[in-house]
Structures are given as C-alpha cells and as structure tokens.
Image (cartoon, rainbow, N blue to C red; front, side):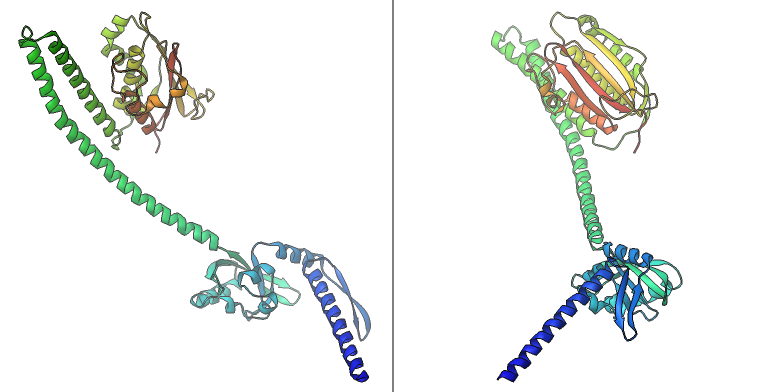
Amino acid sequence: MEATARTYEELLTQVTELQWQLEEANDTIEAIRTGQVDALVLESENGHQLYTLKSADQTYRVFIEKMNEGAVTLNKDGIILYCNSQFATLVNTSRSSVVGAPFDHFISLGYKNQFKLLMERGWKEDCKGEVVLKARKHPVVRLSLTTLELDEGFSLSIIVTDLTAEKDAQKDLKNKNEELERINHALETSNNDLLQFASVASHDLQEPLRKIAVFSGLLKDRDTNNLSENAQVFIDKILSSAERMKQLIIDVLNYSRLSANDQKPEHVELTEIVKDWMTDYEILIREKRAKIYFDQLPVIEANKGQVRQVFQNILSNSLKFSKNYVPPVITITATRIKDKNFDAAPGNNGKYFRISIKDNGIGFDQKYVANVFSLFERLNTKDKYEGTGIGLAVAKKIVEKHNGLITARSTAGVGSEFIILLPVAQFY
C-alpha cells in the first residue's frame, strides 16, 4: 500500500508540474502573440539561446489582434499559417483548429469556385471579393487579398470584413423603399381620385346652391309686400348661407387642385403681383383708407398664379381683420438671406428671399399660430368676419410646394406679421 501511495504521489506531482509548464507555455504564447515580449531565452542542447523578435513584427501582431476584421495568412497551397482572434470568432471555432487548415474549408459550398478564382488572382495583384463563410450564421464577408514577403518567403494575406450587418441593413432599406413606392403610388392614386371627386362634387353642389340662391332672390324681390318681417330675415339668411357655401366649395376645389403636379415655374415680379392686387381691391382699400407701403420687391422663379394667390389671401386678410375706425397700414418688405431660416442673416448670394407682410390689425395670440394655417380653422366668429377658413391653408400649401416656408408672428390687439421664405430659383 505504501509503494502504491508513493507512486500516486509521484504521479500527482508530475501532473501538477506539467500543468504549471503548460500554463507557463500558454502565457508565453499569449505574450508573443500580443507583442508583450521582444525576446525569448530558451534552453537547448547547446545551452541557453536568445531569440529576438523584430520590432516591426511585434507592431504587426498587436495591430492585427486589435483589428475588428478577421486576418489570416496563407501559403501557396491555401493552408492557413496564421489567424487572429476575430477570424476564429467569425467561423465559430478555436484558433488552434483554424491554423493548419485549408482556407476553403471555411467557405460555403456555393462560393468555393469563386474563392478559388479570387485566390489565384490574389497571388498576382491586390483584389477584393465577397463570399459566404461556412459558419452557424453564414456571415457574408469581403475578402481583401494582398501578398506579403516574410522571412520564409511570400505569403497571401487576407483581411476578412464581416458584411452581414451591412447586407441586412441594405435589404431592410430596399424593402422599406419598395414599401414607400407602394405607399406613394397609392397616395398618388388617392390624390387623383380625391381631385376628381372634388371637381365633380363642386360642380354637382354648386347647381342646387345656385337654384337656392335664385329662387330665394325671386321670392324676396317679387313677394316683398306679402312676406312678414321674419320671413324676409329668414330669406336673407338663406341667401347669405348659400353664398358662403358657394365660396367654400370654390375654396375646397382650389385647395384640392394644389395637389396636382402642374407647377410651371416662370420669372415672377413680386412688385407687379402687389400692384395687381391693389388694383383688384382698389374700392375696399379706398373705403378703409388703407395705406400700403412697399419698395421694389424681387423677381423669383415660381408659378405666377399660385404666388398671386398667396399674396391675395394674406393681404386681403390684413384688410379684413383691421381694427374698427383705424385705417389699415400694411408694409411689405423683402430681404435676400443666406439660409432657409426665418431668422437667417442677410446675404447677397443667398438662395432665399424673406418676405414680410406686416399690418396693424386686430392680431391674435401667438399660441394659435399653428391654427391659422390649418384647414377650416377660424380664430374669429363668422358673424363678425367673413371667410371659409381655407385662405391661409392654401397659402401654406402653395409656399411649401415652392420649397419654401411660412409662419406668422402676432400680438392680439397690435397686429400681425406674416413671414414667407421663397427660393430665388426652383430646384428639384
């Protein structure tokens, strides 16, 4: 029993010593691989010998190990002489199993011929190609091949870049673009249907409205003496409502037509636009004793009819929402600016004009600025101020269709300023 015990103890000691030597060897290999040592002293039959490592080799090893890409070195037969940790991770195996194996062992079956041609070319010139690795997730990788001259001769260096995430992103982007195209097509079809519906509906609605207005007018004119005072009031309300309904239908039709891609840019003189508006509203301007001030306004590239609509809607609002017994004062200015920003600095070569239309009317609370550009939104009751609540929504849509911006700054009881940014020239 004692001899057996000694033998067991000897074996245990031997195993412990071997484990220690193995750990020391592993530590040494790791130090060499990561460039922590530049020289080794090894015992041989001829005594201790010094082995030095080139500084360039040390830098190369550290660099390769820290790369996010995989790196391998092949000999003429395609056998892997070296690989870094990242490549071993890509093929989901240990580095010891990689070194000494043919590289094409890790290439998916359908890409082996492609890799063979790529490798033949790589020995002649630097080249790149994509293959799929034989691993659990079948990663798509780009191989960048170049030759290296080592002490042992020429070797083929391959940098392996994982493209899986990039390919997945490209596929996802392609799917989203296709979905966006389908949505755009459906939206375009819907807009065309809506435009046709608005056109038909406006025509069909205007005819009965016209009859309501005509017959109500005849009743009022011919039977005035036979109608009671209340009946005359009711007829006036019918006529007023019919007129408002007619204007609402026209405004809705005009708004729907803005969705059509019928923009034909031309050179538009904004000074002429304002002068034309003053001519059209000459009587109302005189009645309200309004003052309109403006200098020479710029020439821009735009759809003239639509820009005229913008100025008409905003300027007519300035007249409409004026204070009682206070003559309206409207000031129109334009400044060329550097950027597409309401507060941008002036710039002679800027791509946009900032146009300001300022009045001294009733104004509104600034917190409602978004509401004034919304369809059918009204900040004042229709019995005090006429309108359909579409005018500024139309103006906003036209400005945005011209690659511009519009906003308003206002104080209740003081007045409003509408600020429009329009490009000097249209671009698509």
